[in-house]
Image (cartoon, rainbow, N blue to C red; front, side, top):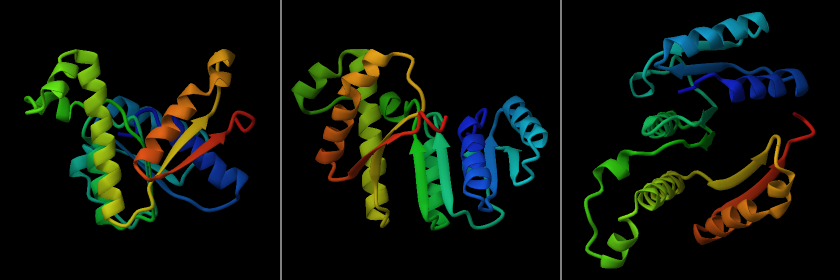
Length: 193
């Protein structure tokens, strides 16, 4: 779901105002209140190129061809439905920042590997491991469908300068991408925002 559409508004501003290119956004969410608020903000900003629809992502039938899919924190399987829609439409690009992913966690029973069972007996470890497993499965599916998959770390702001300069998150993300044989990029956009 598009939620409060912060990323959509920022991207619309960048494409339309900074780059001077035409673009069109459709935001989907089943929460009518956030759809109404996003529509109100778009109207206030005179962004007539943005529409917001109250619907479940899995039930949405696009009214045209979309070049890019954008998801940020689309909860649980909403990211999967959005990716499936983009693949079905042959969208040129998919930019996805997944959120909570409970599907595997809820349906995981037990492994025949006792070491894995030992590790996954701790709730937070199980949740994070299966969340990463979900992301790996998404990456592999996208590669199989012909997409060039990349990992990206975007910095828009940082309230904790010590965390910003430690670089641990970037090193960890880069290591994961190397293991998956996918590209990794760092984009520091703090000056722009």
